[in-house]
Image 1 (tube, rainbow, N blue to C red):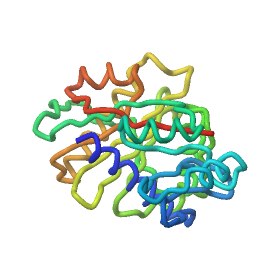
Image 2: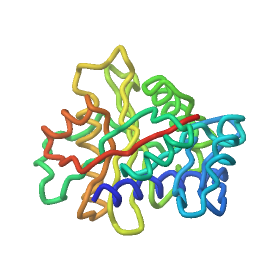
Image 3: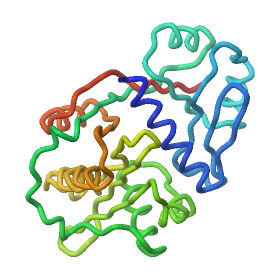
Length: 239
């Protein structure tokens, strides 16, 4: 399942790259790289059988490629990358929830708005960029407004938009919930949980059997309480 969830995430990045026109294909990998250096800036779908490690390392180090490479947890592949001077920079947990295990949701979600306009896309990018601490360009989000696979949401607290979230439906019918963030000054009010529950409701609209996400160690504990199961890790590397 770890491989399936990781590939779902790669397909998510690939879809965004296609829609926003910054997906690139190399014979040994794919990568997303916008001119604005917006999220997602990733190298993924690595072909380890034919990969030229030195060439990839040099391109990443010299900014010819995004300096972030992602793989599903695999000790052999991890060793190959470390032996070729890449650094393991982060690890996040891959998690899933069967649709039959989604708890009953009683919230009317009246504080959450689907992003459908350019102005709302700008709000989403501002909230997301501040929440996660990296650039998310509005030019990345606008092409997703009328997308059949992705829906974006922003949430209010005291009439101010302070939270965000995104749902992605893959070709296998699985839904991923992504980019769940809250502005720093508004954490601790349950706004992230409310957004997560809204996205879980949307997975039912998608008629998905499975819900996927990736989470930090702190996030993992929250999602475990909601019924999610941890399957493994997504590993990131840099030069």
